[in-house]
Length: 267
Length: 110
Image: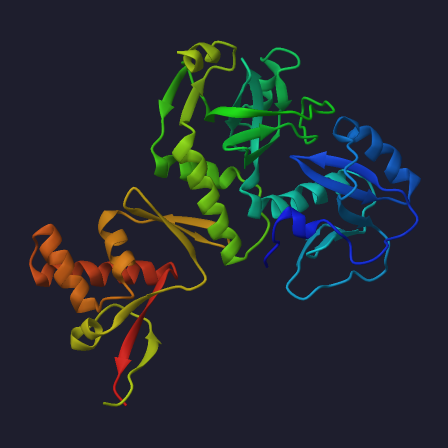
């Protein structure tokens, strides 16, 4: 499917309803969440408070508002346990959302699709800011993302779990996300130019091993959040990832689960 | 001259028929050349495959050259006999077919 540009995604086909949307922006993607149920709205307000932003033209997301999902021809849908995301060119519907965790999961899936045509993606990684530049430490579960975040100064961590990478204003930038793991926090809605990408590998020493383009691509691919089986989407992702690693150095970071790793990064 | 048709046929390259055929990439796959080597993704199961230099060369030219032409290319590029190049391609195609990355399309004269 062609999701087009964000400008094409802006306006709903019709007046949605009288419910005032919860307006947020994640990775500079404005989203209007239409949530009727207080049991969902209250935790969503808490969870996304750092990302509240009035844009006036957010991409509309309707929660639990129809019995039968509206299927658009060529649209994308994804079933996650009992919850379902139905994405069209002008809006999305979330169905069967019973708690904030389901909402959070569907938002992540939605963002992977909306960011894709805009040279953006979500990555299993912690993002830490140092001297105004972002360092992304990525890897699968247990790689040490939360450890890296916990070893970093307070206020320097944009996320300990899901990094948002996007090309904008002529460079690759890391955005803060509300998607956190063990190191629970509301997140920081700021963006910083990316200085480096580090595949985490727990080891007995601290060293950064440069990765070739192919090694970098192979390292990143399993860590990208991606939910579509569409060929064209994968081609777009490959193009985006290559663009990133052609500009941003990628390393395998051998580290001992202590703060000494910063010395090899600074070196 | 009657139009040529291509029909998928599984199995390794055998004799004259195989050499006249084409190697066809699985159209469902997404791929990208990185430093002269192919990285291939199967979108349906998210499997990632890497090809070495020789396999990448064959992949790159698969659909524009016949198997015989590919054998000639490999023979010239790597200074090996045509027979050895044919054998290598046969082994490679068998391996790639097993992973459903390619199939062999044999030219059928009608």
